[in-house]
Length: 419
Ligand SMILES: *Cc1c(COP(=O)(O)O)cnc(C)c1O
Image (tube, rainbow, N blue to C red; front, side, top):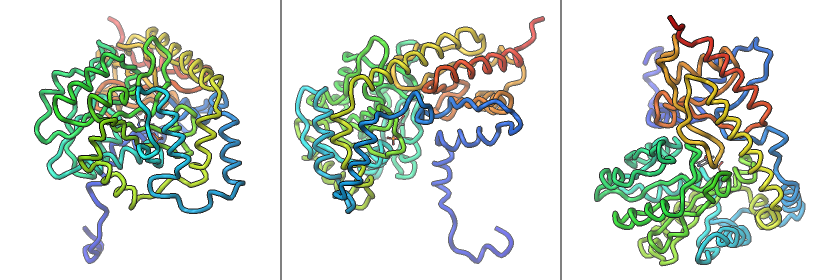
């Protein structure tokens, strides 16, 4: 410290700056800063999953009307209960119960500020001193960031790209110990784009039961599947192992800015209640903030009135985009996609640096691609896989074609010259 600053006793919390530096958002910001301001072409954003800017991904009118009506009713101008307002909890319980072999009650539902707050609450509840949690790699770095800030140890297990990004359950058993409290499963997968089968999910549940640990099921991409495997909620196996399901309307309704999510105890045997987990969740929410009450007030209408035509239009758009992505990748020698995406909005792509002349690693690739071609792609290192790339394909298909044209030109320009 210089300039007489040593007299001040406060500092920024170094631990937090380390945790937030690893998020997708901070990496994407760094890439945006690297854009060439003189490039007249529009930037192609393949770094973050937020298609709401594209008119073809506009939220359904019934959902917009539900928000307007909720505001106009003047019924939702007050504070919300810590766990969310009852009509919203009931509507989420009904909505999720459609896919389950048992019925959820409103008491199983906690309304949160997007899926992100549901993640934060879950990790806070689980972070007893000395505890560790099992997290898949490639990962969604929000888990790592919150775990670090709560001193919850993270142990990673690899997903297998050659086998549909399935969990290697032998590794899971090998890295778990007596302090392991939970395993996180993200299905449909971000960043992998995979959709797990019923059998695989059941095996995960059985392994968790054997280890005596909870399953945290991040299902923020619930029902966003366009391949052969349908979406199966982890909660379907809630009688084998207690499950905490995390979700939101952000992705399926394309409204990430509405900040409406949920944390759900999918636990028909009531084990979470008996072990004090439910009490902790409520306690945690008692000191937290809630999503705006009028957004909650709109939830019953949003969940009940959105038509199948909206959902199938989104699925068709995502399928088209995913397949454009997969086909264009095949035309570019230095990148390969081991697994055709079947769900969510992103896919992992392997970078073959030996075919490139002046690119050091995935971060270098993405920085130069931003500068030279105004295309934003997330370097794999951000999701735990160095020299891979994560491509988010949920954008207008014509913009996606444009983006891949530029990636192809970039790779050609940087290809090793053949002797
Ligand atoms: C987008 C995303 C979230 C966050 O969802 P919000 O509802 O916007 O908070 C959580 N988990 C995964 C895997 C995501 O991709």
